[in-house]
Length: 221
Image 1 (cartoon, rainbow, N blue to C red):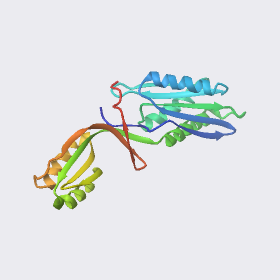
Image 2 (tube, one colour):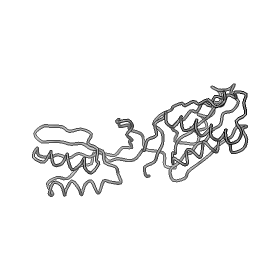
Image 3 (tube, helix red, strand yellow):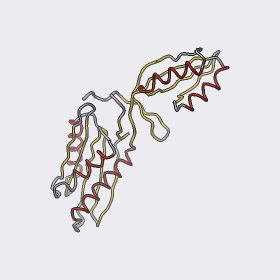
Image 4 (cartoon, rainbow, N blue to C red):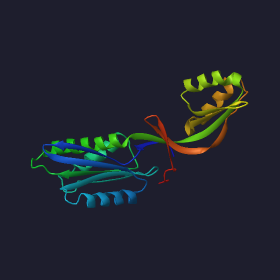
């Protein structure tokens, strides 16, 4: 499975258009069942709302996409929310946009803009990330190679997690699975064949606002 864009955590965004409140809530989900459970939860929470519109995209090999206008004019609510997810290629998420009618009709164009904007606010609050599979790698080296290796790895864009200084230097890195061969060949070349990285396992991870987050592997669907 390749890398994909999703959101880091559950979040909420809200906008007001002509006194109508649009409360958008987003949740990362792995299955269609999780999306439906989330939708049912928000229907109960916002039982007094005029509309609970939703859209979700779930899956890796086979994408499942669903949406509902929940009583709004056809294709003015759920489809715009889904279009936001499609345009940003965000998957394994469910977005529910709750509307409390403010007394003024928005028209079809106004509804499309409002639901789209609300969905975008929720995604912004949920922090869009790129999840991918990484190899945890370790490089053990003599102190004389440290400066050269640090410079070369950073120039190539690899992430150094930590460095341990004992009788030798042990450097640990997260290497995208798709770049592992390039990484290993680069280490051999930079060290003139003296070093070979050791893989210590694999993990699904993403970086957000300077922090690494780790996840279970996504469901193979």
